[in-house]
Amino acid sequence: MPSPRLLQAFSRHVREQPGSTALVASGERVTYAELERLTRRAAADLDGAGFGSVRALCVPAHKSPETIALLLAAWRQGINTLVPSPGLGAAALATLTAQAHGPLTATAVPGGGVTLSREETDPSAADGFSIPDPAESLLTLTTSGSTGVPKLVPVRTEAFDRFADWATGKFGLDASTRALSFSPLNFDLALLDVWTVLEAGGTVVLADAGASGDAGYLRELALDNEVTLVQGVPLLHRLLASDGARYPAVRTVVFTGEAVSEQGLRDTFAACPGARFHNVFGCTETNDSFIEDIDPVAYVHPLPIGTPIEGTDAVLLIDGPGGSEVLQGPGTGELLVHTPFQTRGYLEQARNARAFMPDPRGGGAVFYRTGDLVHRDADGRHFLQGRTDFQVKVRGVRTNTLEVETVLGAHPDVVEACVVALPCPEAGNRLHAEVVRRDGASLSSLGLRAYAAKHLPRHAVPSSVGLAGTPLPKTPTGKPDRNSIKNTRLNGETS
Amino acid sequence: MSTAAADPIRAYIVSEFLAGEDAEDLTDDFDLIESTVVNSLGLVRLISWISETYRIPVDDIPLEPAAYRTLADIRGFVEKAAPASV
Image (cartoon, rainbow over all chains, first blue to last red; front, side, top):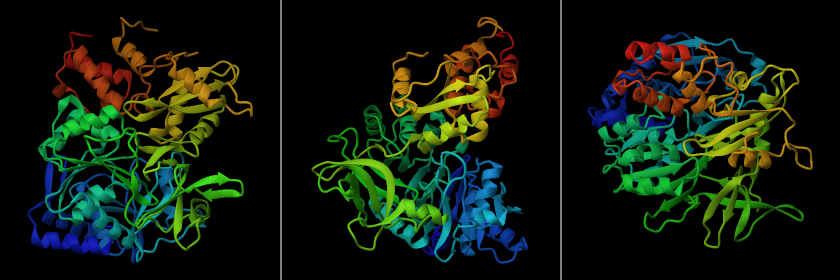
């Protein structure tokens, strides 16, 4: 687990409650004693690989007890683990591994044990990237960059411990907690629904990564295992609440990632009659920063992101006559936060100057520029309004539509491309691309999708494509008129 | 090109996932999963449509995406599971 304190807690659970269930995966129960056995087996394979003293290891986040055991084994040996999405392409993975100064990749083998491989990486790829220090951080997460190579975010051990303390108290986690882990293991959400729950001695029910859209499977998983904690994007809660399902065992529901529809909210209230409901806001760089405790009989919709979590400092930055200034009182501005849980910075040093800045009111605290536009009302409640840039969330994953446009625009048959986000009941947003072909080009929308799928992560591939014969509508400054394209799509006037 | 009546599976894919788009080059071997024309949520819809249309019990339907990679794959599976229907 991503801190020495967590490892001690895990060892204590192995001693004191060896027969209790640590993990449920693919219908199998894994007790704390069995997880310890898997962990020792992984440790032996790491030791026996003959690579000498290892400081950093890349562990693709296959969602399995074996991967969790491998991470535990690596952390026990004081190794910083980079945990990228297992769906990342080979080229992106090689770049990431090089950037994290870790030539070694370890993959968990089903049934136990580890396969190690050494990648031949270009050492210059690591120029300008800090070396992860295992004494400070055992886990390096990746942000869901919408294109290309994700950003590397080390999670400090002491920041994780502070987060675990907060979450354990706030959500009442203990050995009786049974958490449904819906998101991939490489998401920051796993810090709560996998690692903090294991520290508390509870049970983590791992939802199969491949069946994430399957309502029937998820309902059965949650019911059969009597889960008590459900954290996830609105899509998860909607799938669970479908067909009138009821979960009397659920004690805690956490909405996160994107805005919940009012119907979705009501359905979840009905599905979990014994639960407390929370809307949690955060990002990989800072972990959770805001929380709203939702009262089912007196809620407001749209849901506020709430108020800053204890220990979090938040300011809204606005453009004033003399440059950026801190907003006093109610109003809307870019959210800057400082949380007890935040990273010290990306491994890529050049990124940090833009993303992190000193407290704009003076003082030594480092604030993260979220890029989120947030409105604060007179009562101090905060509401998310949108982004200061081109970022949208597709299935809970931050996606930059401008970057998707750039990738489509690089196709030799494409003259111009514009990508807009359209509301979608299933995915929150879906991407639509409007593309102008070169004269005489035979490119079809299927051909463009296949091209996009090759060059983009799945969530960033537009789910519909319009091929226009005429130039895209433009704003007075000559940029594609995204609002006009979006409105045309929304009003059904397909050209 | 085949007509909707002659190829209901193709017609379903086009109307459900490619509405309003040029689908002329949707060949029998076009990779629907890799191209993300059918994503994981779409796969659930597709499976439920196959189950209803061809009266194949859901328990007899493979859930892994590989079984639905191309039109040819889907047709092959339906022909095996419900030979009278196709």
